[in-house]
Structure formats: structure tokens, C-alpha cells
Length: 315
Image (cartoon, rainbow, N blue to C red):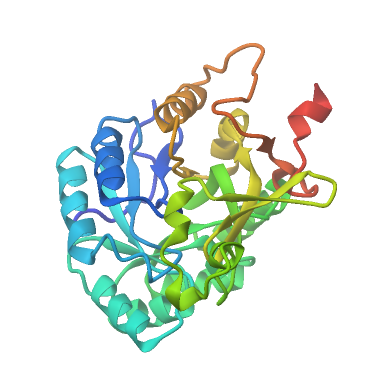
């Protein structure tokens, strides 16, 4: 295994919290992926996670393509992670998963039990993804013994509960770095059905890759015309973007090591720069919390309904 394994602690006292760029959740063209990661090589993020985590029918990018991008990002000084698919539905998916886990270059983010089984049985280190639903010190202990190097908090976990979990885990001797989903549409659910294809009245296995028409997903509104969810093929995301940049200092104080930023099709450089400024204590005053054109939410972090924007309530 290469030197791309995540460090156990932030690398510098001047960077109290590391920033990671999560995998692209939407279906983009090869050209768009290439342009995006060419720009990301110069962004102030320490970790970049690559790969298709949503749908196996998105075949524009092969494993060799991701490995090529990964090598280029490594040369640019980034730590590279390969993410596994979250919902495995076929033997073909399993074959692709085995190739991913056995890539021999980069550590893998395990997003389901099949990836976890493959990596742990091979004695390979891994990152425990948020979809594994890690809620207690006992489970984290099992993961640590299986080869976990770091873990991601479930996206719906509140600040209070996460602080308790980190403290209890450290007391139990599990001090692996924790990563929090700090920006982007929250991944909420996955289904064997493709809702984007259904919107276009086409079956999933003949979907014509219609989700590529929506580089930031398809908004689903309630009967009251309120934006509720973002449809992304078989994945359901929040409509609003979670934005926790005003919480980065608190995260570092409670023991969080990494803040994850989920890529968007437009304005991502501004998002990254804003979070880089925030982790060094430089927030604009007043803080508009409007990095790109999107509603903002942070309710889960405060133990409230996820779609709430508590900053608006406070202000």
C-alpha cells in the first residue's frame, strides 16, 4: 500500500483541521471530470477522494482513469483516496469492487459491507465511509481491529452526539481520525430504483444516462412548492447544501480531524477557499453563508430537522 494513507493527525499546527474533497456524486462527462480535478490540484485541500459511489451504469470513467487522475493529484501533493460504490446490486458490481479494493496504489473508502469484507479479509487498511453508519465506540473498535485508518461520521449525527462519541471512543482506546461532511448536498438514501430515469419515463436498464443532464441533480419539490430533495439517479440528496464552515474551530476542538467538501458543478473553488479561510479563523462579517446559489441547511448538526438553517434562526 502506498504512502497515500491518511495521517492520524493534522499535519501542521497552522492547519488545525484538514480539508478533503469528497467524490463527485453527480454524473459528469469525462471532460468535466478532467477539468475539475486539474483545477482541484491547486486548491488548498489536503485529501481528494475519487471514484463513482452512486451508480454502476455511469461508465464514462474506468478504474484506470481514476488511477491516472490519482497519480497526477499525488504528484501535486494531495493524499488520494478511492471510494467504493455504496449500493452493490450485481455480480458485475462485485467484480468492479474487487478490482477497486485490489488497486495496489491508494487506500479505499469502504461505503458498504462488501467493500469492508473484501478489504479486511485481505488485510488492507481502509477508510470507513459515512454510509456504514458508525454510531458507537464498540463498532468503531471492531472497525479499528479490521484495519480502519479513519472514519466518517453519519451525516445526520449532531454535534453533541459526535463530541460524545469521539470522547468515548478515545477513552476506549480508539483515537482514529474522524471526518465530518461539512459542505454539500447531504447523501440521504440509495435505492435499487432510478428516480431520475423514472422522471423521464424510462426504465433503469435503458435510462439513456439522463442523469448526466443534471450536473447538480434534479430538484424535487413538495406540493407546497418547497424544495425538499435532490434526485441523483438512485441516490436521494438534500435539496439544500449543508454549510458548517462557521463550525470548523469547534470541530477541531472536539477532536474532528477532517472536514469534507462535496463537489458541485459550479463555484467549487470559491467554496474551498472560503473553508480554507474559515479554518484559519477568517470568516467574513457578517457571514452571509451563501457561497453559491443554493439554500443552506445545518439542522442535523444542531440536533434539529436536517433542512433547518439555524444560522438564519439565530440571526
